[in-house]
Amino acid sequence: MVVDVYKELMKNIVDVDFSTIEFKYQRGAQVSRQTLWRHKKAQQNLQHSATGCRQLTAYFTTPTNKAVEATSSSSTDIILEPKSEVEMRKEILLAGVRELRKKLKCKKEAPVGQNYQRHLAVLHFLQLQLHRPLETRTSLSLMTANSFDRGTKMARHLRQWERSWLISRSIPQGFQGLRNSRFTWLDDEGVQLAVREYIANVGEALTTHGLAKAITEYLRRNGEEEEEGIELENILVNASSAEKSRSIKACTARRWLRKLSFRWRDIKKGVYIDGHEREDVVQYRQLFFLPQFFTLLPSLVKFTVDSEKNTILIQD
Image (cartoon, rainbow, N blue to C red; front, side):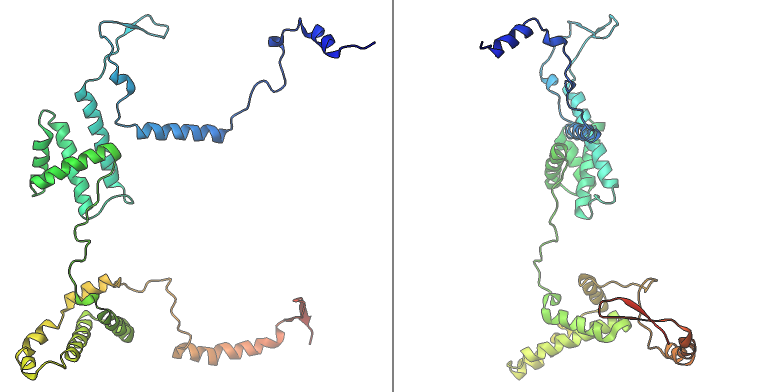
């Protein structure tokens, strides 16, 4: 007799309620602490990025005459009113001022030079908008520019920098003085080699007056080589002016040293100085250390290493 196994199984499970059956792994996967921390960190970063932005609910105005029932146990009614443009603008400005002050106080991220002046001007502009909300941005930016002894051009840039800071928390960097539009003697490779040769020969006896004199001699010597083909009359006429023009002063030499990354420093502890050939060191080694070492040598234990790098004791 052939039995249909499938039909027999279906007869047995027709009346079974599977909702009451608890399987072994029905509870689901357990989330680790690291995953929970990562989700929490991502949520915090998202909230930080949304600082100063309007919420979506602000774009959907709700009627103020209708009360919304509270979801809590109390029966009090809560009326939701959208924030005004002035209040939202004030919150955005306060967040920008707080972040800008934090950046200026941070030692690692604080800007320097002209970039610091830009951030400081934007900070003053934001504070003026908070203290004088009824005045226009144009008048306040011009007032801020005048406080920095500037005019309408900086006021126009201030409005652009302020908008950039509120949107992306960044202010464009300035490039004033970064373009080398003038050629100086220091740009000449021969002058740089002369400076480094003089420093290597003199060593610790380096002085800015001596460096200025060495560079002046090099410039005049180089100028004489270039003027070999010029007539004698032109050389005699321009001799005094050439001597004056082909020379530098000690203050110029100091600036050149800073540009070449040289700094005046004292030798501090921790700097290794090779002094094993000094006279007092050689005298101590020959008269005291070596005689005492040779007297103790017979009582020392001696070892050697064979071809397989095994240590072997030498017995006398």
